[in-house]
Image (cartoon, rainbow, N blue to C red; front, top):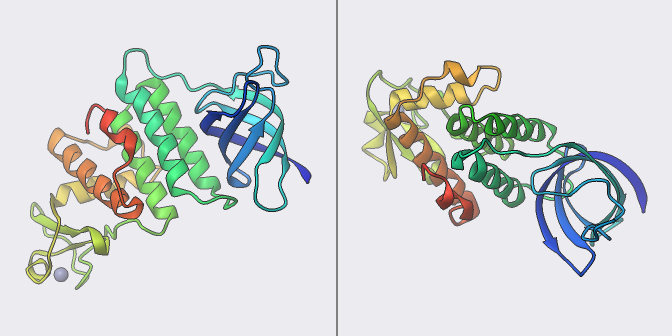
Length: 248
Ligand SMILES: [Zn+2]
């Protein structure tokens, strides 16, 4: 075993024994990893911090050589996730993000950009700012990391740009949109407005401030339903925490 330092988000935790806890960490350096935190449940345990869900922590862990769990030896709090008071979307949005990181990432596959996107999203959620759009952005970035981001630039079949103000067909199994002519030959699952695709394009670029992306109710609903369909297609089910989100 070798001792490694990492910065991590706690994305899952289960009590293991009277004194210990098993956690899943999403680390910036090593990706997702399972750790055993011995003594974490004791009042005066070896860790300076409460290892709460979605806390960002600096850790030292003894890495397993193959299989099994890493052993957590040190943990220092960077910041705790504090949802905006009275804002259910902020609270459950955090849980939803944790579920997506747990379900859609594989162990020991570093994804530093996804890590940074997760931290940025938690910061927006904590501030109660643009929570809805922040979650959509996170999902788009995660889909891109998985190589599953829908092609947003034009028709999947013929490549033509989407006509303004048209209803555009989307086929989940192909992960793409079809122009009105090509969609007649396809069995499609969703229709969204061309403006919704523009919003998704803007959301997929983290350098565009969320405040500059106008999301009215119909656009939000279309974007939400489309991304839920994409994620459910990969997972084989809808994410569990999704039903607690006020917009779901
Ligand atoms: Zn076409």
